[in-house]
Amino acid sequence: MKIEYKPIGIVRTPFKELKGIPKQPSKSNGVNGIIEVYPQFQEGLKDLDGFSNIILLCHFHKITEFKLSIVPSEETEVRGLFATRSPRRPNPIGFSVVQLNDIQENKILVSELDILDGTPVLDIKPYFREFDSNKEIKTGWISK
Image: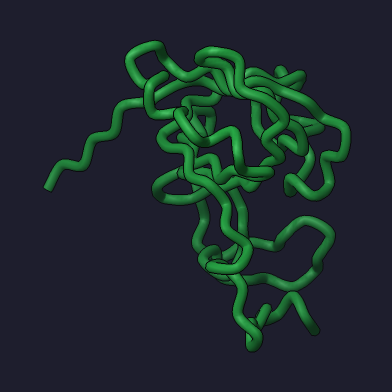
């Protein structure tokens, strides 16, 4: 089976190389960027401006390898890849919740970015806290 995705846009950020990118959006306070949506998808931005945050699904185009066991940053214990948010994955798909500041034609102005400049965007979704929260959320090894 062949699975193929086509980007709907590209991320513009101050991060020109992988080194120095924040590990999560929550650690990138004050980092602004632009999501340039390709003109043929601009119509799909209608009504998105009413949301404070959006989910970006991106293709991490600079990732060339992965390991199934890793030591997460700021940790010392080896963990299974799928129990981490490491970008080095068999399918290097990134998931970031960023702050939506404005939409100007086909450009979405955002902040709290943790993405490399030039990263292809696969999809954009509104973030609904009330749909995503659960009173009994477990955070696995992170909460220990």
